[in-house]
Length: 138
Image (cartoon, rainbow, N blue to C red; front, top):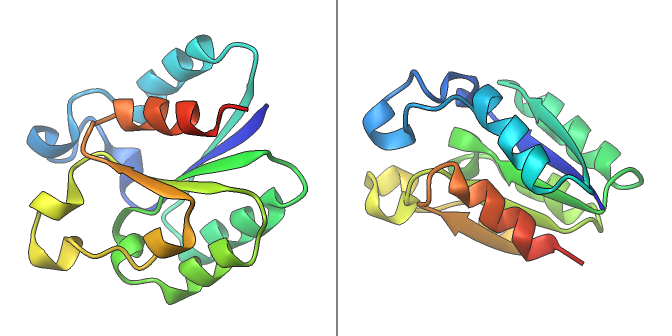
């Protein structure tokens, strides 16, 4: 199984930014744990703060990956273009959020990208990624 884990803006700051919401462990510390837990899978990890790069990576996933685990960060609440990119590929995409977006500020409670995804996992911290990977297991 080949999976792309794709993180959007500010997720490079997980472990430093608002630890009471996002936790103390960085994603760079967590990705080896994911790879060990899914040792028979090929897992590629990308993070970018740029919407266009997220779109490019999603479009490129079409012929390269069996699934995409996407944390669009703040773009989930604003980006029609990202939702359109998800809809344009046949690769299943699972949206992930570290915090429970439905228990956050009103502007964070709606995800424009979620309806384009196979499903959404929200509120379990970094464990949300493990749950997302389990959900795409063939």
